[in-house]
Image 1: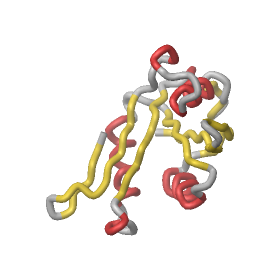
Image 2: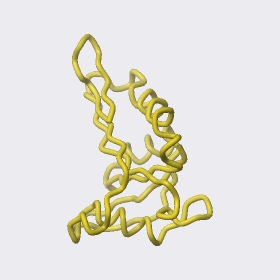
Image 3: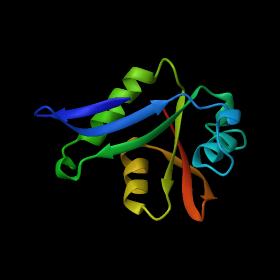
Length: 130
């Protein structure tokens, strides 16, 4: 996990973790869906689950400091810190959040791989290379 500080205040947060075991997830949860999709979805010619993958998110950045490059800095730092540990990262973005989907695909370089539903909401499952 990383956070960003401006003048001593935490203004952003990002989590990058190893994926949980399926047995440690709740049926019908977002986390279970991510783990299940990793076992049936390909990225860069291989099943996601056959690669060293991390779960990325959440990413939170205070609205007052958006547009100052914090998201780009998070991307650079997490790639640098985790590239020896993980080959790829996976994440989800709510389908009703086109701004986040755009940011994730353009600035992070994540590729949408699947769409899934949990609790009546639709999400995109994405992956990116470290």
